[in-house]
Image 1 (tube, one colour):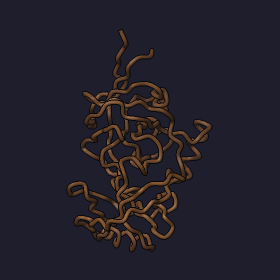
Image 2 (image 1 turned 135 degrees about the vertical axis):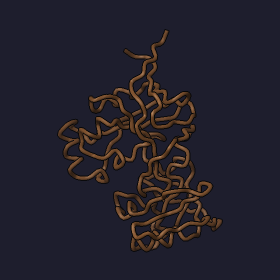
Image 3 (image 1 turned 180 degrees about the vertical axis):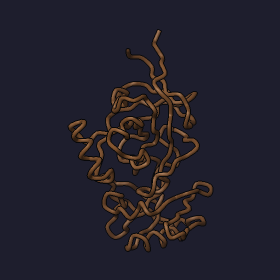
Length: 243
């Protein structure tokens, strides 16, 4: 009989509804075959360049916070207290944009969100909706452990993983989950496929510590959803098979 053992618990869950904006903790996540429902379904685009704006090139995106959503539509806040809400209106135009060398068809929208973002970013941008997981860099779901974040000296929020897991005091143990079936809560199952390579968004000091500790810019894992389900902080994390 295949062994099933609990290896930890979910500590935090969250995502950014608009690509590149501030990561927000959530009371629960819905995992689907495409990944985390609602995760980065929206983005701001440079229409002339046909590019999806990314945090690494446009750090001002982190000043934009989607605190709540009305029927899946983004409500964007900025530190000054201004907010842009109301349903973005589809223009009927689809623009194929570049995302890390990947051609992604995006549905362009009019609305107050783009106007506020343009003001903060100092450039004209348009709000667009993407197909599920189309502008997620790697796997549809990402995991990192609390111990790994402590070892690197970063707030788990800045890592922007779908799920932050408490797997004990030893850092980087999530790497051992690659290729395994990981059960989250009562029904969701994910299979990490690779460790996650980190970029400049994590911060220079954190990247130096990560390189010193691991010899590579690897922190957390990402992968695929094998079985859908709701996941909440406090849910058990169990692993099928293996020692």
